[in-house]
Every structure is written in C-alpha cells, then in structure tokens.
Figure 1 (cartoon, helix red, strand yellow):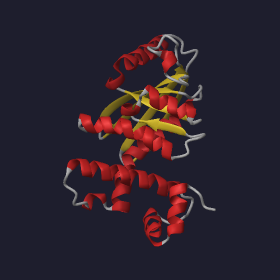
Figure 2: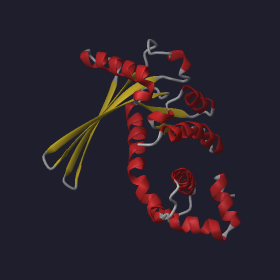
Figure 3: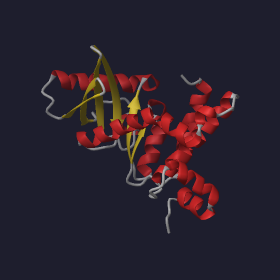
Amino acid sequence: QVACAEKSNEITAIPELLRLVDIKGAIITIDAMGTQKAIAAQLIEGEADYVLALKGNQETLHQAVIDSIDEQLEGDLASAQEHVTTEKGHGREEMRTDLQLPAPEKLPEFMRWKGLKSIAMATSRCLRDGHETVEVRYYISSLTLDVKRFARAARGHWGIENSCHWTLDMTFREDESRLRERNLRENFAWLNRFALSLLKQHPGRQSLVMKRRSCGWSDAFLMEVVTGSTC
C-alpha cells in the first residue's frame, strides 16, 4: 500500500517519464494507477500501444468491462480470442487463460479513451501444495485482436513486477539503503527503477552491475545509456 499523496505523485511522474524515453512502436503496460485518459492519449500520440490495468480507481469503467466480458462468456464468444498456457515447476502448476475482445462503444466515455480498441481478462489459476489460488485481472488496450500478443505484454509486465526488487537489490543494493525519510526513499526508488530501465535497454553484454560501474568510469558510456545511442 502506498499513501494517497504518493499515488498522486506517481500519476504526475508517469507522463514526465514517458516524455524522456522513445516509446514509438512499443507496447506500454501500466498498473491501474496509471490508467488515465491523458496518459492513454500521450501514448497514442507517441505512436505507442497501451495495455492498461483496471481496478477501483476506474470503478465505472472497470465494472463495465467486467459486464461486457461476462456477456461474451454467456454467449458463443464469436468475437473474442482466447489463449491458454500451462506451466509446471518447483511444486507449482499455473494455468493462465487470456481472453481479448473488441472494445464495445457502449463503454463509459469510450470516445475519450484515445486509441481504445480492445478489452481483456487474464485469469491465473495456481496450484501449490494442494491449494488453488485464482487471480483475475481486467484491462483496456489499444491493441487490435491478437490475444497472444496481448498475453505476452500483460504477462511480461507482471514478470517484471515480480523480479524487479531482486534486480534492484543486486544492482543498487537497495535493501542496504540507510535512507529513513519516507518521501526520500520513494524518490530514490523511482530513480533506481528509471536507471535500471535505461541499463537494461543498453545492448552491451555486460552485467547490469558492470554497466552501472561503467557509467561512473566513462562519460561516453554514460551518454550511451542515457540517450540510447551507441554511435
């Protein structure tokens, strides 16, 4: 849980971050806090596609998407695409079902969500030690119907969420930070994640730790990482 003031800052920070990076041709996935009309418009104007999660902060739209998908599930799913994957390992079995269908124009404020083309549901059923957990997530997206493409984007986002802390700890020693003031910790965490994103985009084969050190050793390498250029 993050305090409301910090959530407000996050909404402000996302457009600023998007202005700093080249998003053309990318599929941008954002948590529900970033599901805002202005952010969707910014992504489309930047020639990117979006997959935006839905939760209570967009309660009316969230419920409308749930209702639309439920209607399809009760029918013949003629206009929908479905993709099912199963993974097993380490005593855990997960079945993920992704369902994507055209965004109905009856959705609340449909015309104000720039580029909106599809809605989707991702259901994850995980069985571990005889116990089953089920998680359902809903999305709006500018992607046309291609459920495998949607599934890769959505699944990749949550994979990054799950692995990000470990990477940050290994690269920046975030767990060893002595910062105690809450806002300062949040600001440094945001900067670390931004730096991590830049380091990962650099095509060099060094580890993230070595790339970070090289930024301190060489101004030229630092500029390569910051600008995304290797010329």
